[in-house]
Length: 423
Image 1: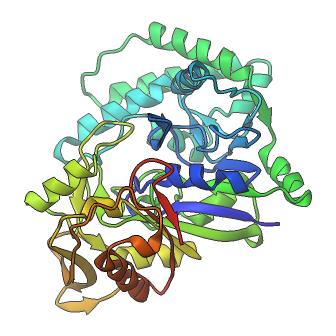
Image 2 (image 1 turned 90 degrees about the vertical axis):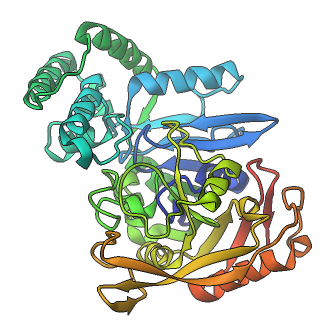
């Protein structure tokens, strides 16, 4: 038995949460392997929109175990609120949610460091979600982090106080004005820690080893997208973790030879939140139209997403570094009504034509080269059979499959879990 992966192939917000929800029925365990509450996985069913930030997207299914892996960073305050919301919906979280003892905790002062750091950068800011993700991973790699399992060891309160004191000294060094009341923040944090300790904590790497030995079917869920990977994304405008398939190994404690299918999720167009290069970005009415129809606002921050044409150069990059075996295309319905569609198939980079992602895709050194395809006018959100889709929609899919050299096995034609066509 092997572990299958679901990954985003763009700059995040591809719709991974919906696909995890759709596929959860065929798995026993859904596991999140990296990132933190800077992610927002949106699921829609029974006329209700649900947004998850830390909890895996299989939580709405009965008898499915959901695991938060060691590679995830957890903000106990946000986490508690998320669970309270689920409880209000009648979801029994405690019986089917396990947390790795090796997952690191986000302190309220991590969020303050994030805020101070962004303010100090001025116009050169990264575009952080200000959730404290980067500073938490910095403490992790600097061997100063605080892990969930430490709450079970005597004397953890002293380590907590020492780390908060260290953070306050760092905040002062940024020499910017941010107002906060550390006593209030700490009281709320301690209350959330008490709640966190009441949940099921596990040694996750051993748990997955035993599950594989007993033939449990496991689906690993990534957050953000491959172009935000700390190593292979558009650095420095990236997140602080490995969002690619390699991150599943380190974020769950599974060996590479236990990875099975890798599902790569992408939108029929491209979006990006925050700062950073975006070669196919649209600044015209078409870009505004896509954003409006696609409801392109961040599930975590509410920020408007930048919109542009589909970029096959960056998509191929993501497919290659992840070892994608099957493709899933989201939001095809958003492009309905456009007479012509453009797809970037190559770059002109420093006066050369290239088909790979170079060291930098800064707008001043790179120009996208497009191919134009006929669009479709038909409304497709109520279609549930691939053969009934417009001919030009199917031609668009075929064009992408030919260029990407992979089949698109699932297409989404709306936000609801029922608006999903499996070919």
